[in-house]
Length: 255
Ligand SMILES: Nc1ncnc2c1ncn2[C@@H]1O[C@H](COP(=O)(O)OP(=O)(O)OP(=O)(O)O)[C@@H](O)[C@H]1O
Image (cartoon, rainbow, N blue to C red):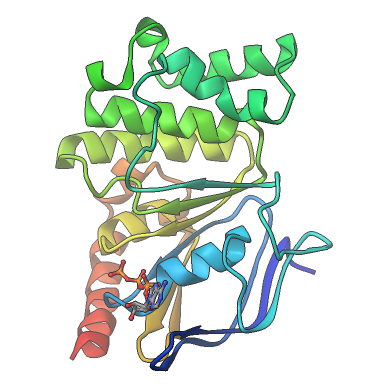
């Protein structure tokens, strides 16, 4: 059995005036340690699917199963990171990264040290006593990642975490996040509009079509790219070939 399974997941948003079917019978299985991306036209339901997997939103039909748990509410095994960092501006970086542990009453020395080590790994040791407003966008996203990882979730849900960053910062952060997650055998699902990012970071890409959102195609990333860092992968011949194929599929879905 896969680490994470979506079994015939469908979702409709219901309002006073209408019912909109957004996801229809999504089936997928993800193994522990895999890095997966969801891509697809705007409004096809990527964020909705991620919210359902996180347990924050309950699907209309079907099941999400993580290890042996049916997910119907937020679970400590799952960490969620968004485009906006949602750091608390009135708290220092240290206080921000420890907040998840504090809320869970897990602020033991060992756990605190784990978070502080991550902070060092993300090159943020020097800003530990600063406030979020004093940091660049890339630093803030790194701090948000440390906060998410501090509680040791097994599954990371990443909703366009790099999209607000400049191109160079984004490429550097892709590498850093990739190394951090792979070295800890974390499982990750990335929602992105950036085909290149999806190819460079993933083991597999699920492409969704819209109205209602369904899996239209699955792209397995060739082994030659999977063994490289995201930055190196972008320079490989196979990257350019796959980019063309995925681009054409996205073009077909958008028209
Ligand atoms: N809370 C809500 N109530 C009603 N409809 C919603 C709600 N949230 C999203 N939708 C609709 O559901 C559809 C899917 O939205 P969702 O945000 O999941 O798509 P997406 O693929 O992540 O989009 P994007 O790529 O633009 O971020 C859209 O038509 C959106 O307008």
